[in-house]
Length: 259
Ligand SMILES: O=C(O)c1cc(C(=O)O)c2c(n1)C(=O)C(=O)c1cc(C(=O)O)[nH]c1-2
Image (cartoon, rainbow, N blue to C red; front, side, top):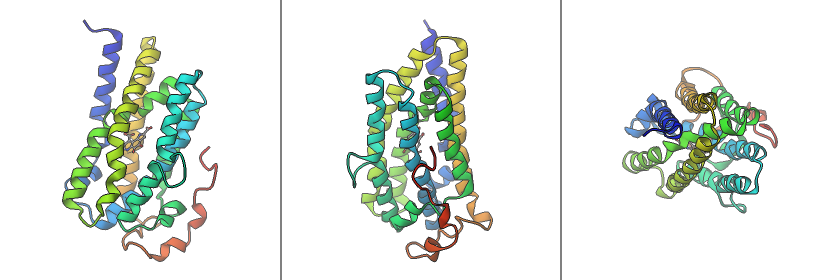
């Protein structure tokens, strides 16, 4: 017999499936091997802006949790991304993905070439987690229910269609398969436990739909970045492009930019 808990789980899984960004035209082209090197580099560079803000939003969520058990659980996510020390963690692995694709890490770290729509999408997600209650902030992370699948698809596509990217660069995606499974299992259990009323259930579903929109908008911005003049349009010629030190570097992310 279906209970409120199983009904909510079904609703959440349906949103995570139907509105996930694996259906976005840019991801469809990526997975079909149709992206040019310039497009793939542009994605890696812009997605780094998302990656580096994930631990920031997880710190905002951690501050809302009221038991040691829950805070420990969320601190582990921060450590997954930041590592226990320099040279470790998901952010470092994403920088190595960039290097494997011919992007100097300083170009990613400067943030100068991130397109405006990506900044807005990431800001939207961080601020959502800053302002909403734990139920909504944790529910927003449930896109990760679909993330392990897209990681496996991506590893396969990169190996098959983009051999110019060095294999070691794919370690980020390999690690995220298990991390995503564990994170989404934990987060789903919390959301199903915390949602006590139909209104709570609706808020959780809406939070997840919002997060799907964040990921979709991010890809829209990356997809359309070469149709206009402006920052982010010069990511085509690998290392050494003079955009690195060009105008716009003052847009780079400084400490505390997103908090
Ligand atoms: O490449 C992707 O498609 C993808 C999607 C998602 C997601 O579904 O939110 C995340 C990630 N990657 C990812 O690497 C990651 O660390 C991550 C953390 C979170 C989150 O909301 O806490 N989502 C995701």
